[in-house]
Structure formats: C-alpha cells, structure tokens
Image (cartoon, rainbow, N blue to C red; front, top):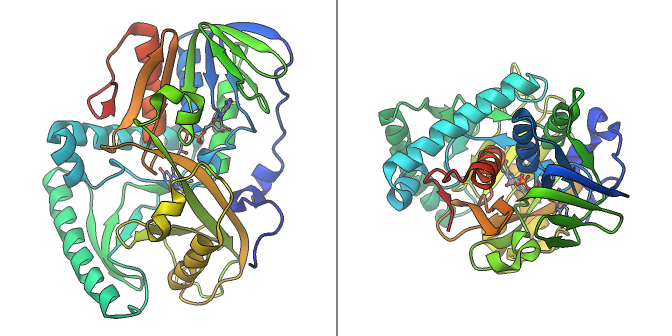
Amino acid sequence: MAGAVGSPVGWDADPVVAASARRPPLTERLSADVCVIGLGGSGLAAVEEARRRGLSVIGLDAGRVGAGAAGRNGGFLLGGPAIALGQAAAAWGRPAALELYAATLAELDALAESLGPQIVRRVGSIRLAGLPGEPADAAEEADRAVELADCQAQERLLRANGIAVEGYHGPLGRGLYLPDDAAMNPARRVLAMAACCERGGHGAVLFEDSAMTSLQPGLVRTAGGSVAAGLVVIAVDGRLELVLPELAGRVRTARLQMLAAEPTVTAAAGGWRLPCPVYGRWGYDYAQQDPSGRLFVGGGRDQFAAAEWTPEREPSRPVQGWIERVAARFAGQPVRVTHRWAASVGFTPDARALVTMPRPGVVACGGYNGTGNLIGPLAARAALALGLDGTEPPPYFNRL
Ligand SMILES: Cc1cc2nc3c(=O)[nH]c(=O)nc-3n(C[C@H](O)[C@H](O)[C@H](O)COP(=O)(O)OP(=O)(O)OC[C@H]3O[C@@H](n4cnc5c(N)ncnc54)[C@H](O)[C@@H]3O)c2cc1C
C-alpha cells in the first residue's frame, strides 16, 4: 500500500515538531507531591494544574510527549460532548450535557489564549450530511437525506440553547457550520503545552521513554528509576484498562486510523478546498487541510468495527483503503498518500468520560469516546481535584 513512508505520523513532518528535542528518561529515585502518568493533552493539563497549585510535579511518558492519540489525532477542537447534544441530554440529563458543552468552549478559549493563533486556528468546523461529491448509490443518497434532517434538528437544538451555529450549503455539500470550533496540528499543541509546564523556576519535570512498570501505594516504578508521590494521576485514554485492569468493563480500547496526503492542486477562491475541519457521514469520517494544503483524513472505524476493538496501534489495510477513498471525496480528486498511522482511544458505555479513584492515592481519567482534545484536559483537572480535595467530578463525568 502506498504511503507508508518516513515518520508514520503525518503531523510530525511539521518543521516545529520535527525539530523538537527529546527529554531524557528517568534514571534515579525522585519524589514529588504529584506524579502524572501519560503526557498527552490530558496529563499535561493535570501537570499544569498541579503546578498552578504550587505543588511539585513529575510527569512520565512511555514514549515522547504526545506519543499517544493526543499527538496523532484529527486535530479537531470541537465544542460539546462526544455524542450529539440531544443524545447526551437524553442519557445524562439536559443540564449536564449543556454544562459540558459550555466547559469545552471555555477550555477552547483558554487553549487559544495560551497557545496562540499559530497553534489554535479558530476557523470553525463543518458537519456535513454524508460526504462531499455525488452519492455512490441509492443507499448513500437515502442516508444523506436522513442525515441532513438530523443536521437541521441539531441546528434547531443548538440555536435554542444559545450555541452559535449556521446552516452550511456550499461546495462540499449541505450541513452545519459551527463557528466557535477550531483546528490544530495536535503534535504541536502537546509540545507547546509541555513547554508551558516546564517554564519558570518551579516548572514540572517531565521524563520521556519512561513507562510505568509497577504502581504501589505512593510509588511509581519505571525500568530506570522510581517516583514517590502523594498522588498518582493516570491520564491515559486508550489502553487504560491495560494500565489499570480493574477498569476493564468501564472503558474499552478501540483503534482509530488516519492518513496524510500531499497538497491537492485545487484551491477554492480565497483558500483551500476545506476551509476548516469537516466531518461527515454521522461524524465517522473527517478531514482537515492545514495551511500548507496537506490533507489529514481519518475514519472508517464503523465499517470494520469488530476488528477495530483492539489495543493494536498499527494501521490496517481495510480501514486505510476506506480512508483513502474518503480522502478523494474530501479532496474532490485522487490523493497521494504520504503517511498512514493509528492510535488507541477509550470508549465508555454511556459516552461519559471516566474520572475515578481506583486505588487509594491513585486517580485516573480516560474514555473520551474519540473526542478527547478538550474533554481530556477537563477530565484530568477533575481527577486532580478528586485526588487532592475529594471534590466530586461534574455529572458529565462517570466517577463510579
Ligand atoms: C486517529 C484519531 C483521531 C482523533 N481525532 C480527534 C479529534 O479530531 N478531536 C478530538 O477531540 N479527539 C480526537 N481523537 C481522540 C483524542 O486524540 C484522544 O481522546 C485524546 O488525545 C486523549 O489524550 P490523552 O492525553 O488523554 O491520552 P493519550 O494521548 O492516549 O496519552 C496517553 C499517554 O500515556 C502514555 N502511557 C501509556 N501507558 C503508559 C505507562 N505505562 N507509563 C507511562 N506512560 C504511559 C502514552 O505513551 C501516551 O503518550 C482522535 C483519536 C485518534 C486516535
């Protein structure tokens, strides 16, 4: 299959990411008030919050900063729950669903403020009914009509609740435009977050290539050293039930896959073909085009669902074949694939993320149901508050 070249993760080809220095592994016995396991967007938010409280913090990652889904995802920064607002309201109660919506938008504002427009591009997002281009068959045409009605219902619901939304009818098809949303290169985002955490005389100390190999009360061990800490925060989304086996059944790992493709030659007047992140076909397929015109496209998990409930992190041929066809629909022409990759995420039975204390002195967060770029940091801060102060997480998280 073409495109399995160079670094497997397309975002890493960005010059800023490619030039970033690695941090050394842990090689000694250290102690801190808080030890955070997992340095994705969630773990780094916990590091930053602990630091803000004046606590000493050590962060450990099995790979580099953003080695997991946080550095490998679609780069969509979307307000709201992982499931549609109406579904979330039915499952968790309307106040909880709306509270989460407001919290994610506030999180996005704060992220944009701290990282700036070079990293967080406030371009909005488009939810399409179906995929761009002519439907391949009658079934696709019928599904698109049903989805368009759903988009219109969503538009009414968002409007009724004061959330900014517009109808979209343009070159890509029909659907919704959500002006508050944003796009990013996710690898750049986590590297910038890590740099913020380390800044200043009392910065956190972060170690890469330092997998936690055992966890005892107050003590984390790695192959090269150990950290004694009053509180351990496990901020791992996918594969969480492998790190904490007692969470099996409450969170389940799935693989999500993406590819990157060379810039396509057709730019719409005033910009590239995709003006902002676009997701279609009930959100299963998604694409964004970065400022250089490169395409980043993912999806297809529902098409091969049984095989994708797996902790494996290698891309698979069937899903990649699907995504390549989807990429051509988003691009409006065949694409030249440069990178293919996959990463793990956690799903929960009721689509609420876990914020829980599975053992004394240990809190964990994860299970963002495929949408953790904003919900993950909220969950990680709620986990820290649970561990340090005993504060109950908000009702849009699952504590038990
Ligand atoms: C292909 C794909 C597309 C996605 N698209 C989007 C999107 O557009 N928008 C969105 O909001 N969400 C998206 N998601 C989901 C989102 O990426 C995740 O929910 C989010 O990044 C999770 O971040 P995290 O920091 O909680 O966990 P992770 O990023 O999974 O980080 C966990 C970290 O823990 C480390 N780790 C694991 N075990 C250990 C151990 N034993 N010791 C030390 N470290 C350990 C890992 O190396 C990893 O760096 C997507 C996910 C994927 C895979």
